[in-house]
Amino acid sequence: MPILVNAVDRIKCFILTKPAAAGLSPQIFPEEEREMNKKILSLLTLLVLASMVLAACKPAATATVAPTKVPAGPPAVCTTDPNGCAVIKPGQTIKIGMGAPMTGDNANFGVDISQGAMIAVSDAGDFQGFKFELVAQDDGGSPEGGATVANKLVTDATIVAVAGHIFSGATEAAMPIYEKAGVPMMSPSATNPPLTQKGSKVFNRVAFTDAVQGKFAAAYVFNKLGFKKIAIMHDGAAYGQGLASVVQDNFKQLGGEVVYFGAITPGEADYSAPLAAVAAAKPEALYYGGYVQEAVILVNQMKTAGLTGVAFFGCDGTFGEDFLQRTGANGEGAYSTSLFPAGSTAKQTFDAAYEAKFGKKPGVLSPFTWNAYDSAAVLIAQIKKVAVKVGDTLYIPRGALVAAVRATSGYQGLGGKITCDATGECNSTGPTFVYIKSGAWVEAAK
Image (cartoon, rainbow, N blue to C red; front, side, top):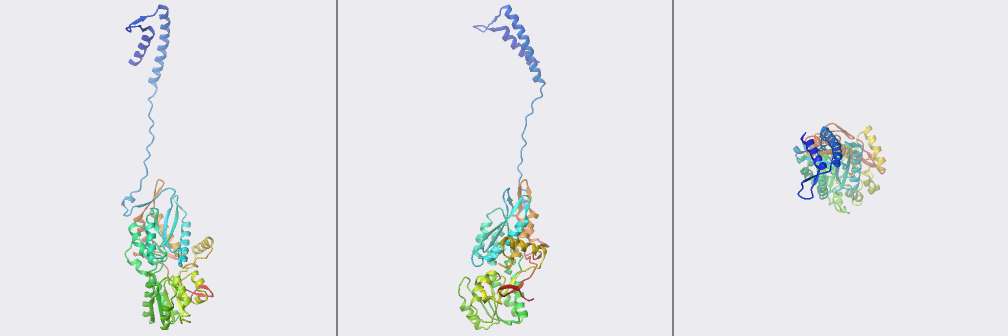
């Protein structure tokens, strides 16, 4: 034990000797002092030996190393997905975007459709600790507005899908922007047929197309109402003109005569001149492809233009409470298209929830209330399928979500089972025709 021996020797040296005043040579203490110091030496030596033995026997202290927390990283799918992942962090919501006319003459469509989608978001509840949120932006229903809103929505990394857009022109302008970003769309109401013929991977719709609506409308006017000579007007936009062309082609195929086909300029307050040209052609009915604002003016000016007794036949773009209120008695007997789904427990539950929350029955402001719910609900269902939670963060692979939405099959919506084909056509029902009777929309005879 060299350490112990060395310690004892040092104590001896200190007690038995003391430094000389000069040269540091040892100086011997007197005898009596020397005896006392020997006793002190023995006691100190025992204490030192005991403390050092105890120290030698004590286990070596083990250093406590704090566990290294390895940060949870994104799942592997985020590196292989062509569009990466949307990353939803704690405290954030899973956002579903929407572009719609929320103000202006066609605001009833945007308000109604966003409200229907809100019910779907509410019904989605909590998903792995995260809530869903609808972010509805006002695109005015125009192509310019559609592009502006799309560019805004794709800058928000928590926007994972879009329940829209609502109008066909706005939708067409927005599609390439979502395509590049890998954001899937499910429109409740953009019905222009070519939208699904552009090769888009992201665009889908639950609404029937204008090819279906136009064919059914032409058959209803010719076969059910018995009109053989009609005039057709439209607003020159993608939706209105496309629908009018379908009606024209199908009506002619049935043996009917289209005595007038022409466009009006949207946003004007007077259409007496084009209506006078229509009156000169002497039609039995006037079919219009477009939206409420222009349809209201046409109906209110028909009598003064010489079209008394000529039936007005609109479309899903002219349906709604706004049309009723603004045409009044002039609108009595006018036809339109709606989408009343068949009765079911789910529909009854939705109808009650919608009226309780918003104070109006669904289908009053627009014909797309139920489609709005279904478009958002389908997106939510597919988000839940592909999302991956790592730690406290949710990852949603964008490319996988685009593919999952397009692969929707047999989803039970309010309007029926929803199955998307290879181009994104997901509609399960056709149009319902309605007309105004005693100031209210009622279902027309089938």
